[in-house]
Every structure is written in structure tokens, then in C-alpha cells.
Length: 155
Image: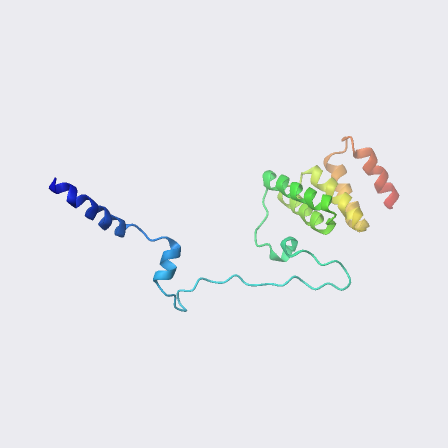
């Protein structure tokens, strides 16, 4: 019986030894200038002269990651690009398809879609380059004859 009186006291004492949540720590200890967390540098999107501005989330100057071979990330970029394409946001789609080619240079689907979106953006040189790379990677695909016709029409 005497032990039962000690149990609640021990539990309360034990709870005070547990680490505080981060929100409680921020309120408990005032931060000084030396304790402040580094702030991310705020950048504004580049100004364009007459052309459509690049969405901030798709501007390559904001990316700090290096691209290495990652087929899963490449496929994810294609899926996001498809979403932009369906919404009619061709500039965002182009950046995502280009990103997919950076993650996996051998992704023929990304090159084909990049060519299509570059055509929509009226960038004939970029479309030719993308279609040429697509034909290098997938010369016998079902889309290859149609792509060859497009390339002939662009010359």
C-alpha cells in the first residue's frame, strides 16, 4: 500500500526527464542572434522581356541538386510534366521533361514528350534536337515514322 503512493510521484518525475517537443523548446528558450536558424535565401524569378515568365518552382536556377542516373526520378518528372501539359502550361512541362532527361538520358519517352512540348512552344531547334535524340534511342518504335516525318517537315 505504501508503494502505491510513490507511483504517481515517480511518474511525474519521469515525465520531466523526457525531452521537450521542438515547439515547447522554442517557447522555453529565447533565441539570440547566434542561435537563430539560417534563413533560406529568397530569390525572385528572373524578369523576361516579352516572353512568358518561368514559374518559380520550375526555374532551373533554383535547383541545387546534382543529377545522376535515377530512372524513378525521371519517371516522376515525366508524370509531373504530363500534368503541366494537360493544363496547357507548356513551359512547366518542358522543364519537367528536360529534368527527366537529366535524370535518365536514355529515357526515350522523355525525349519524345520534350520534342512535342517544344513544338507547342514554337522552339523548332529544341524540338528537332529532342526528336533526333528520341530516334537515336528508339529507332524502331511505333512513333518513329511519324517523328521522322515531323523532322523532315521542320527542315
